[in-house]
Amino acid sequence: MPKKDLVRIFAGRGTRYLAEKIAESYGDDLGHSTVTVFSDGEFQTFYDDNIRGRDVFLVQSTFSPTDNLFELLMMVDAARRASARNIVAVMPYFGFARQDRKDRPRVSITAKMIANLLQAAGVTRVITIDLHADQIQGFFDVPVDHLFASSIFVPYLKKLNLPELTMASPDTGGTRRAATYAKVMHTDFVICYKQRSKPNQIAKMALVGDVVDRDVVLVDDIIDTAGSITRAAQLIMDNGAKSIRAFCTHPVFSGEAYERLEKSPLKEIVVADTLPLQRKLDKITVLSTADLFADVIKRVNTNKSISSLFKF
Image (cartoon, rainbow, N blue to C red; front, side):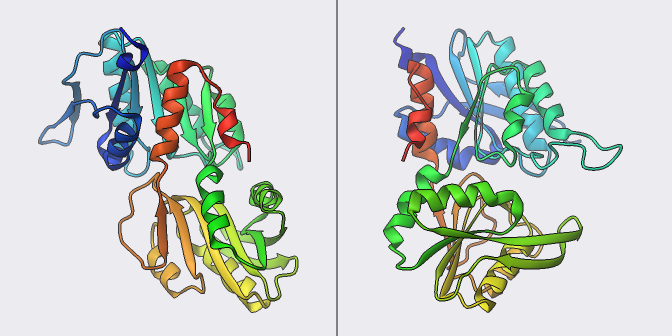
């Protein structure tokens, strides 16, 4: 059997919209699977296609509710019991990634627990993009292909041709990300330093760097409630910036996020399609990761380099 014919791409219910585009870009039909939901909310996964001896790629982001994570685990287990040769979890958004360490006593390192669950279920490889913390790769004892949304964001950013570009990070944790974009774009970067009173609430924020008459682009991996990104945008504009945009890989957009983004001074919010948007805003631009994931699946299948995709 040719190597390409060994590959079957399937989707969880939460990420079918993206899996269909990945399969189309790969040059194959999306595999057929069924989820039966019982009256009490329990559900069962089933593969309609024969996957014996195949390399199965399961596309599912593990965003809320946790049914998406559990469905992925069930699909992995079903593929293992159906004698799949390899089982690859394609997780555009790795949920619970912000719980990657003990930041206070008596809490779970949930990202590590999820890595354990996936491996126990039978995953032989993981493909994901822009993990909240790079060290999550080390939580796995199977190969992890960690992709970067910069491969789709940088070309778009270059097309904008902003005359006075400055990159920015909405917090100190994203300093390396902003510095990387600044290096690629041959420009400077600034940092917004924030202190939180509790999760999703900022006590104070200060700007480190000069943004006067600059076209500033904030870069981040996740926008959740949009509190940090909109406050950083306002702070940057108050310090004399000419324009402000935001680039974000994972548009979680929970709580009052859409209202905050709509009212904010952000001229444009560019996001990847790792998560489905619940609403449309004129200032939100969605760039697809489908071609990137399809290319990586091909490279995994043919044992070609993946890191070469991210050399600018």
